[in-house]
Amino acid sequence: MNYDVIVVGGGASGLICAGIAAGRGLSVLLLEKMPMPARKLRISGKGRCNITNIAPKQDFMQHIGPDSRFLHNAFGAFFSQELVGFFNNIGIKTIAEQGGRIFPESGKATDVVDALSAWVKRSVAHMSCNTPVKELIIENEKAVGIVTAAHEKIFAASVVIATGGMSYPATGSTGDGYCFAEKAGHTVHPLRPMLVPLVSGDVFMPKLDGLHLRNISVSVIVDGIKKHDIFGEMEFMGNALTGPVILSLSRKFIDDIRAKKKIVFCIDLKPALDHAKLDARLLRDLNSMGKDSFYEFLRGLLPSQLIPVFAELLQISKEKKCGQISAAERKKIVELLKNFPVNIFGHRDYNEAIITGGGVSVKEVNPKTMESKIIKNLYFTGEVLDLDADTGGYNLQIAFSTGYLAGISLQKSER
Image (tube, rainbow, N blue to C red; front, side, top):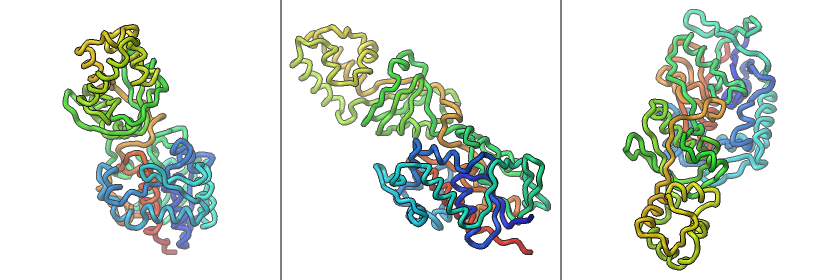
């Protein structure tokens, strides 16, 4: 059977593309390699699914790279307000949380997937799971169909590659789309894990496993030069750092990390106080606690898990009396509170990366339709494109917007 459209990949962008195209009267076949669609969407946002972000478009674009301008048309056609309205219409009520992040009211990503899948089925798109695609069929520089892993040829007027990236490969994201793109003549920019925990070799790291720090600031020092500051929360995880601040920094500095540059994260544990105010506070507290131990003093300053590491780095005995702390030692305490150093030398792999950096060059894709500029009737949507963004709902909006734009741009075959 010939279709108007074959969509390869049943993730966020593939589902919305298939549903929109089928709703316009096109015959659509959605092929998903896994036993069920949207496996990655089911675990997104720690199982809560951060659908989008209600930041104004100009602010939203600041969180996207390497070329956010490519998305002007996609966002013009279908942005966060339209996406929230869409989900409300298919039965998913949403709530806004800190930082403009939008979640389903139920707090369950599975509810989002179930509603989206049911909507696709109502739109009369045909979905076939457990159907991996092996290759594209291209004739006369036109995409005309696909070949499944079972060697079945299926033809269509257009083919949409919505296969996702390389992150969380257990969900089916194993980079198939990049291979299809390269074989079709497209440029695929270097791939690397992004929004990923960062690895440190510092000996104290295992002692801080599980420690969650809120309201801290991190300065990034690259080869001795301060490059960036960010405020928020983070977490120690074995020999790695994670949490919102760290994931955002991983995206910004992943190439420096992979280039083996010397990178130090300096954590400001007291960002609300400058050095002078913090020194004055410490002097006052040390004087008032003169007969108490340095350990008791630190209990009022730091999480208990951090105290032994902090004291060891300062080389001040925990038993020393507060009244015996010298001015030089107090200066060292202030400096460590304002600049607690963690050396970064690597990152975790795709199994723990939220997204993939790199991908199909957007210069070779029409931003008004998502159609390839190289192969006619071939479209790319979502994470397979060389677009990536910070955490906070930005990446899913990219997937939904590019999928939607492809869905309204696809044409019926001439039969």
